[in-house]
Length: 255
Image (cartoon, rainbow, N blue to C red; front, side):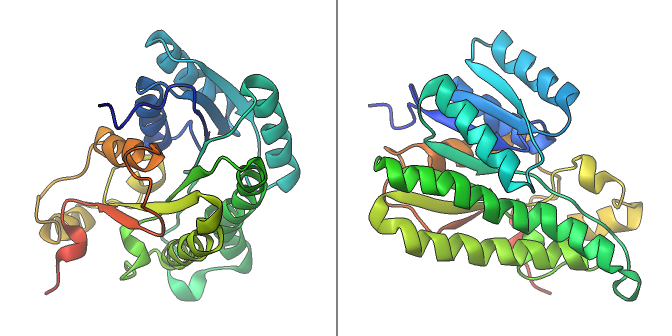
């Protein structure tokens, strides 16, 4: 019995050229899925494609602004021409900022919300509609954050956007359950990635470690198991509306 066989499935990974997205894409490929890496930066996407292809994966890159519905529809059309189906959608794009609350401009607020929330909503519209219409179900995996509940200090807009992702996940799980489209979210703890390294001061790291029972940062590969589990129809066929923490125990801590 292989509960995690993704052979023949097609996974579209928005932000698949990011630190976390690429690691999870590598895992889905390793279990047999065709991988569509979607991102703005073609150079980064190509580096991920080359890595997965070197491991024997069937992978292609697609350039897109994930906040553009037109771009996302084009990617869907191109993926359908490539493999004929979309079975898994993973929403990984992320934008962060440490701007103090009273100094947050409308432009910064909108930029973060566009990437972290609007883009996910649009992707769920475009790819979720395809899954519902196709009638074969599917798995949508949103990447949330430990800042979603309770909120973290210094990342006000990011925290608000990720709280909204949790709510969006629950709403879509409710909407599409009867269609066999499962919608879940992974809540990563602290995985030093490009978007958050710049706000990880020594003081901040000490605070994080003091609130993380495992007393360390996560490694991107430690998200792979949750990603494969949620992607697999065999392993998680009755799992929808779940917010799965991969955070070293961060969410279990209080004072």
